[in-house]
Length: 229
Image (cartoon, rainbow, N blue to C red):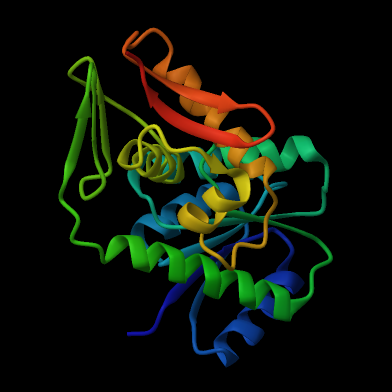
């Protein structure tokens, strides 16, 4: 079986264009034309990646992304006619892995699909079962699980990967570009604002958990997970 991609877009012409191009690239394609079918097809089809439009009937792309993240960490690339920063930030906060704006170049889309799948598969194939623990926090990369004060906390995959990396390298400062390289992959086509969005969301989850460590901004440089003396 080849790599399966689910396209969720209410524009039939775009769906057909993506189907023809991506099938020629060797992918298996399934298309849904509204958000409700998108969720149903995701559960039935079990795709390796989702190309998700935002403006959809029945359920919009935001809701579809939320529901996918409740049951799966499979990568999602959001596609929209809107290019506002708000859309990109919200998509990232909901757990999207990348973002493209219509009209897009098919070669660029293909490159992003390959990059996102490569990053996901490299993380998915890791046998790292080390659990990292500090005061009131415990994180497992293998299980994709975060526990705060002994309770499991829902967390999008990329937030967990970022936190895991910083905790694995505690007290070391990393620039935004270094974090993009280490967590998102050297071929990630986004920008450094992605890191800021994920750090902001992590801080909301970690607020008040412990006074023995902190997710710290090093102004003019980047971020670090700092153990406090």
